[in-house]
Image 1 (spheres, rainbow, N blue to C red):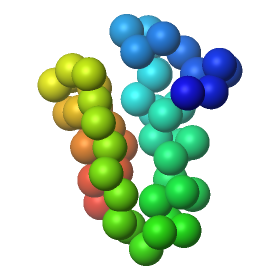
Image 2 (cartoon, rainbow, N blue to C red):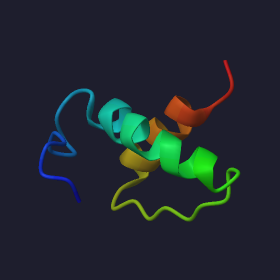
Image 3 (cartoon, rainbow, N blue to C red):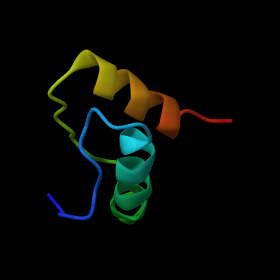
Image 4 (cartoon, rainbow, N blue to C red):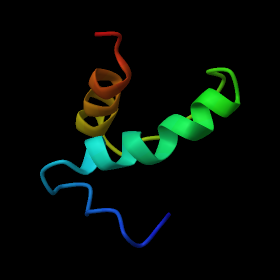
Length: 52
């Protein structure tokens, strides 16, 4: 994990992680597998990647 990301329990952590992951996901045509250590982070990331 990059050292410049906020800790998972800090506000905005999912937003920062999603911004870092978005180019990688797009480069793989949306195919990816992510593991989250909590349901809260999984929900927050899902919200970040949900269509507008």
